[in-house]
Image (cartoon, rainbow, N blue to C red; front, side):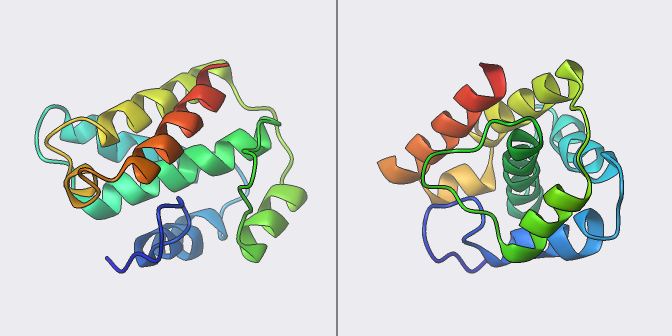
Length: 134
């Protein structure tokens, strides 16, 4: 995974989820798939790509739910998708997203290990979790 900074959309992996799952969809199935991967990992090892997919999906879900982050901007094709597919976000899906974010920041998580000791990433993820649960 190439990372450019601590932002959710600042890595190569998230663009796989965007291009292969989000953009072709018209419903919330791409989000369900992203969160299912973290659930499937359970307490086992969570792969970096699955973790990036979950964080990206959670961020987009926040935007759909009217909870954008301060200083967070969506990639153009994601912003277009959100604009073209307005829909109600079920509270249960927001809860799954929050659980997925928690899983990403719980060992054994490859993404968490890569960012270990860097407070900026931890703050980005904590702020995302707060928006999902407020």
